[in-house]
Amino acid sequence: MLKINLDACVQAIAWNDHGLVAAIAQDDLSKEILMMAWMNEASFRETVAIGQAVYWSRSRAKRWHKGEESGHFQNVKDIRIDCDGDVLVLLVEQVGGIACHTGAANCFFRAFENHDGVGQWVNHGQVLA
Image (tube, rainbow, N blue to C red; front, side):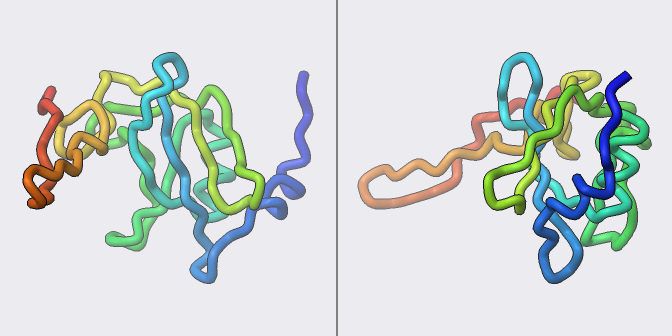
């Protein structure tokens, strides 16, 4: 059985002034970027403990277990930290194939397009549910 020193892992994270760290969810198989959210120390610890993504909702100022309402859980396969310690990447299995609250597969379905000097955001996503 693999033993980790969770306290040392928590201390290695460069939490911002609000006690948060950016967490990017990436599909473990396709490597597609699904979404970005924030984690605080408690949500990071819970993610490690239960093996599913738990975030901190800044807008609701509360814990957010991804999928607890929608059923679209993120089963965490691996967690990576960047060289500066201020961004996490969660490699996940996205249950149900929907990561975005809009019903899209991921949150990055709008692309910037510049046509004749006029820039705009163009929807390239499809709502799945």
